[in-house]
Image (tube, rainbow, N blue to C red; front, side, top):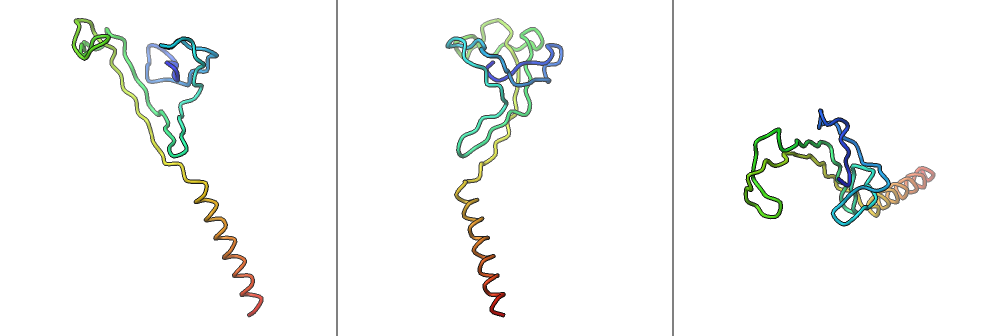
Length: 114
């Protein structure tokens, strides 16, 4: 898991970001994410809930290792929840600020004339 560590195997609803210097992955030992947030210039995605159970907890056999077909072995069962937010454009915030300053300057100038 690049981004998660379970707090307690007996309570898989408790989790936190994996802060290890390196963590096992399919392509070697990359640095862990150390956060539950993924950001792009447009979106911010936050992991808010995570759960998984070992194969013996739920008798489910939906997939095998490499194909979508049952293989006779119980599968891991889990779910996760993410919240996606749109990141406001910096240009829009700067434009609103400059519009506010222009309105203030206009108001001061108008007030002096009255």
